[in-house]
Image (cartoon, rainbow, N blue to C red):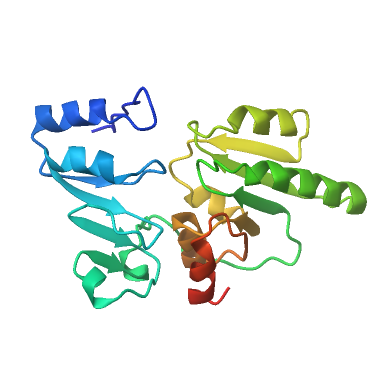
Length: 219
């Protein structure tokens, strides 16, 4: 079966999701969203059990919270909060074998599928300055979601520049990882995937809570 995608009318809306739950009598839903809030979760919990995938230590009003990061929690929080790399959602299709090449040619730029802060744009500008000064023969592959607010601006930034390519809504990254020599990205599931595969990465902090993640992962 193919995945079905439903687009809500607004960021804080969950009308279509609620209709889907009622129609299909869903037992539980797994929630992973940049626009997550307790009001939305409370609405959904009236219809189904809610499991939240989170990158922060925030305690949401959910039945269960799962984070792949090694947060340290007090005893009161541990009951409904599962943390640690063993809960990482990493595809089994990813190839763990990675060999460092002497001449690095391809760089992956992945600051999160949404990148609401526009860090991708700033990094593109910085990379262009470096490439102009040193004339490196390097290709940069950029990953974004079609829901990202910076898609159009990113396209404009790299237009007519063959050194850059933009991939949107790329579902399976195994082929990309196998052709990448180095990565620039933020902390999150994508970082754990790169760590699992063995791609050397420059990690840039994109949110305030990631300062603790950097210390916990020795970055």
